[in-house]
Amino acid sequence: MQVLIYQDYIHNNGILWRRLSVTFGAGNVSYADAQDIIDGALKTADLLVMPGGADLYNCEKLNGAGNAAIKTFVENGGCYLGICAGAYYASAQIEWGKDTAQQITGARALDFFKGTAIGPIYDFLEDQDINKSWKNIAPLKAETQQTAFYEAGPIFTEGHNEAVLARYGIEGSPAAIIACPVGKGLAILSSPHIEYSQSDISRITYHHRNPSYDWVSQLDGKDLPADNNLWQMVCTKFKEHRQA
Image 1 (tube, one colour):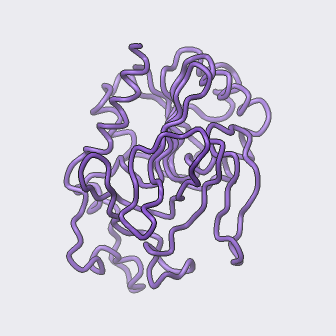
Image 2 (cartoon, one colour):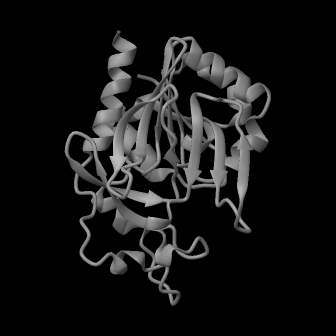
């Protein structure tokens, strides 16, 4: 499979590139920014990965011609993986930090998931405070109990066009990873950062005088994500889709 990672020049996606390269081969993974997409970069791609970050950057660069190209790509049989911000971005509606100073709400143009992506999940925030660290290790259940790196991803309202692939292990068991048919294509939206393994967590840990930066030491023995079962589950679904 030929994979494109969306690049907005704001965020670092080195760990995502590493995981995709291991899965699909380094020679099959490259980057594309908004202008590349508008200019036709998706014509030779099988999978577009919209990474984490901030969904408003995506809106600024892609609204209009960029989103139209992405929709056409997926509707014609392409695959889309949205992780965290990329999952918010592909939902019909977003509710981020509602009723706080950080509130971001509204419709989104891709509309692959017909429901609402709501976040962050306060159970996973430091002191349940949106103004403190958003990083945590979240429990999930797919075929087995799992954990994954969380950094302010959404829950997905249910009863629309989604198939739930994994749920968070918190009250209400909300949907954490979903798959949505889009024309001939497939969109999978993941609230947690399933691309991170246990060894990757150490790469992003920053010891700083602000204790919120040293979030790993505050996990109280929670299991770090020691394998890539969730990642492999998602990638297998894309491979099966392209082979069908």
